[in-house]
Image 1 (spheres, rainbow, N blue to C red):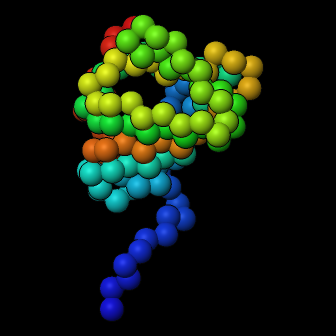
Image 2: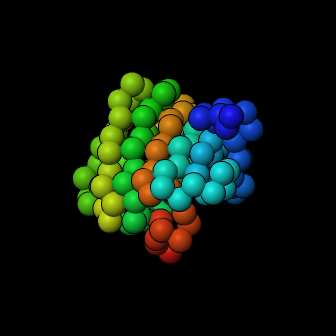
Image 3: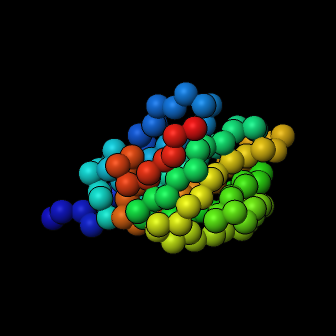
Length: 122
Protein backbone atom coordinates (compact mmCIF):
# COMPACT_ATOMS: atom_id res chain seq x y z
CA UNK A 1 0.00 0.00 0.00
CA UNK A 2 1.38 3.38 -1.01
CA UNK A 3 1.94 5.85 1.83
CA UNK A 4 -0.29 8.88 1.74
CA UNK A 5 2.25 11.20 3.31
CA UNK A 6 5.81 12.40 2.80
CA UNK A 7 8.17 13.41 5.58
CA UNK A 8 10.87 15.80 4.45
CA UNK A 9 14.15 14.99 6.21
CA UNK A 10 16.56 16.56 3.72
CA UNK A 11 15.28 19.84 2.29
CA UNK A 12 17.04 21.27 -0.77
CA UNK A 13 19.42 24.05 0.28
CA UNK A 14 19.26 26.70 -2.42
CA UNK A 15 22.72 28.07 -3.27
CA UNK A 16 22.91 31.81 -2.49
CA UNK A 17 25.60 34.47 -2.60
CA UNK A 18 24.00 36.92 -0.16
CA UNK A 19 24.25 34.97 3.11
CA UNK A 20 20.56 33.99 3.15
CA UNK A 21 19.70 30.40 4.07
CA UNK A 22 16.91 28.91 1.94
CA UNK A 23 15.76 25.36 2.66
CA UNK A 24 13.02 24.23 0.28
CA UNK A 25 11.01 21.48 1.95
CA UNK A 26 8.55 20.94 -0.88
CA UNK A 27 8.50 22.46 -4.36
CA UNK A 28 10.16 22.32 -7.73
CA UNK A 29 13.69 21.60 -6.48
CA UNK A 30 12.73 18.89 -3.97
CA UNK A 31 9.83 16.90 -5.34
CA UNK A 32 8.99 18.56 -8.66
CA UNK A 33 5.80 20.05 -7.25
CA UNK A 34 4.76 23.04 -9.37
CA UNK A 35 1.54 23.77 -7.46
CA UNK A 36 2.92 24.69 -4.03
CA UNK A 37 6.30 25.30 -2.45
CA UNK A 38 7.23 25.67 1.20
CA UNK A 39 10.59 26.95 2.40
CA UNK A 40 12.32 27.79 5.66
CA UNK A 41 14.59 30.83 5.44
CA UNK A 42 16.97 32.88 7.55
CA UNK A 43 17.80 36.35 6.24
CA UNK A 44 20.95 37.80 7.79
CA UNK A 45 21.11 41.38 9.11
CA UNK A 46 21.32 44.04 6.38
CA UNK A 47 20.09 41.62 3.69
CA UNK A 48 17.84 42.64 0.80
CA UNK A 49 16.64 41.40 -2.57
CA UNK A 50 15.84 43.43 -5.68
CA UNK A 51 12.23 44.40 -6.32
CA UNK A 52 10.21 41.63 -7.93
CA UNK A 53 6.72 41.04 -9.31
CA UNK A 54 6.05 37.31 -8.88
CA UNK A 55 3.43 35.30 -10.74
CA UNK A 56 2.49 33.47 -7.51
CA UNK A 57 0.75 34.22 -4.24
CA UNK A 58 3.24 34.21 -1.38
CA UNK A 59 2.45 33.63 2.27
CA UNK A 60 5.14 34.56 4.82
CA UNK A 61 5.16 33.69 8.54
CA UNK A 62 7.88 35.33 10.65
CA UNK A 63 9.29 32.99 13.32
CA UNK A 64 12.05 35.19 14.80
CA UNK A 65 13.21 38.74 14.20
CA UNK A 66 11.62 41.20 11.76
CA UNK A 67 11.23 41.34 7.99
CA UNK A 68 10.63 44.46 5.94
CA UNK A 69 8.38 44.58 2.87
CA UNK A 70 8.05 47.44 0.41
CA UNK A 71 4.76 46.80 -1.40
CA UNK A 72 3.77 49.26 -4.11
CA UNK A 73 5.71 51.97 -2.25
CA UNK A 74 4.31 51.16 1.22
CA UNK A 75 6.84 50.04 3.86
CA UNK A 76 5.62 47.30 6.22
CA UNK A 77 7.54 45.51 8.97
CA UNK A 78 6.39 42.13 10.24
CA UNK A 79 7.51 40.85 13.64
CA UNK A 80 7.74 37.33 15.03
CA UNK A 81 4.31 35.70 15.14
CA UNK A 82 2.90 37.79 12.28
CA UNK A 83 2.10 36.65 8.76
CA UNK A 84 1.16 38.18 5.42
CA UNK A 85 -0.25 37.08 2.07
CA UNK A 86 0.99 38.90 -1.03
CA UNK A 87 -1.13 38.41 -4.11
CA UNK A 88 0.52 37.45 -7.38
CA UNK A 89 1.60 40.26 -9.70
CA UNK A 90 2.32 42.56 -6.73
CA UNK A 91 5.60 44.52 -6.91
CA UNK A 92 7.53 43.89 -3.68
CA UNK A 93 10.98 44.14 -2.15
CA UNK A 94 11.96 41.92 0.76
CA UNK A 95 14.69 42.93 3.20
CA UNK A 96 16.08 42.65 6.70
CA UNK A 97 17.62 46.06 7.47
CA UNK A 98 17.73 45.16 11.17
CA UNK A 99 20.54 44.00 13.48
CA UNK A 100 19.12 40.53 14.14
CA UNK A 101 18.61 37.66 11.66
CA UNK A 102 15.05 37.06 10.49
CA UNK A 103 13.78 33.48 10.44
CA UNK A 104 10.61 32.79 8.48
CA UNK A 105 8.60 30.31 6.44
CA UNK A 106 7.28 30.99 2.96
CA UNK A 107 4.57 29.22 0.99
CA UNK A 108 4.10 29.98 -2.71
CA UNK A 109 1.18 28.99 -4.93
CA UNK A 110 1.96 28.08 -7.63
CA UNK A 111 5.38 26.91 -6.45
CA UNK A 112 8.34 29.29 -6.45
CA UNK A 113 10.24 29.29 -9.71
CA UNK A 114 13.00 31.64 -10.80
CA UNK A 115 11.07 31.93 -14.11
CA UNK A 116 8.00 33.26 -12.26
CA UNK A 117 9.61 35.69 -9.78
CA UNK A 118 10.59 38.47 -12.22
CA UNK A 119 13.33 40.15 -10.18
CA UNK A 120 14.34 43.58 -11.39
CA UNK A 121 17.90 44.39 -12.36
CA UNK A 122 19.70 46.40 -9.70
